Length: 105
Image (tube, rainbow, N blue to C red):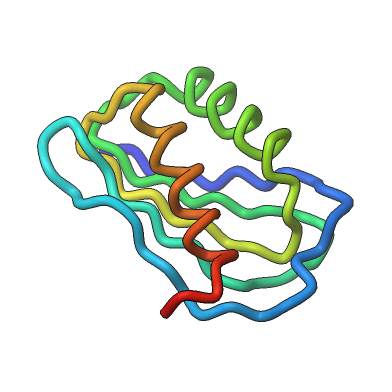
């Protein structure tokens, strides 16, 4: 099991506090993403828990792409991975941040 935290600087602070949102299910080949308001406001913190060791460069590329597409500061993301491919990681992150930003309960 590998665990690490990546913090990405962004210039766009999330202006509203939203309730935490979970997207996805931890199962074979999938992952769970939790998005919640956090500090500091000029960065996005991503905490990754994965059984796949040695893929930190790939995680950095996928997460960096996510932050470029969704530059929201003051947000903490927790990923509980169960062997998801980079495409699935990217999809779940997009879904989670859209759900986080929505006004639906």
